[in-house]
Image (cartoon, rainbow, N blue to C red):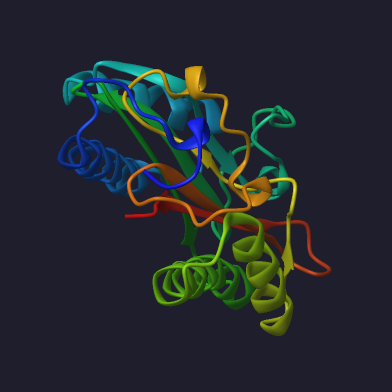
Length: 219
């Protein structure tokens, strides 16, 4: 492993198990997204998500299930949702899951749109596009974590969105990753090793009260 103890892993760590945890987490994200419908409360979507996780046999949840509707898509991970909004006919929402499968941490998140608001659709698409561009930059240049977020900010701005730099990615590993005290990816100077870091992109519309989120494992 390159770098320091910030990229250390436990004795049970396996890259293949990280891939498995990633795939299972995405399975839940996409399945829950299909269950979310206009008229549903944010809390109801969260309850349904937890039921899907139990059904699919997760080891445990390692960070709270976050499903954000409407204006709450601007809230950061550490901020609570405002109220318990009901999804509108034309609306935006994201799902952010941190789940342990086979003793390894999955973490995935994406934004979805119901109805026909073109700016909401564009915002959701932009979060994925910026993620893809930053991931490609990592693969092609070996850029460090801080440089990756500098690049992300530039790409988001070029596309007409604001990048929330309070959300800067983080470590994952065999559970629990917190023992490695790695800090945020956006504060990590070396090139992040594959299978250890989550790249998070959270965008905000420049004038309207909504945003979009996308995250996945750098692998």
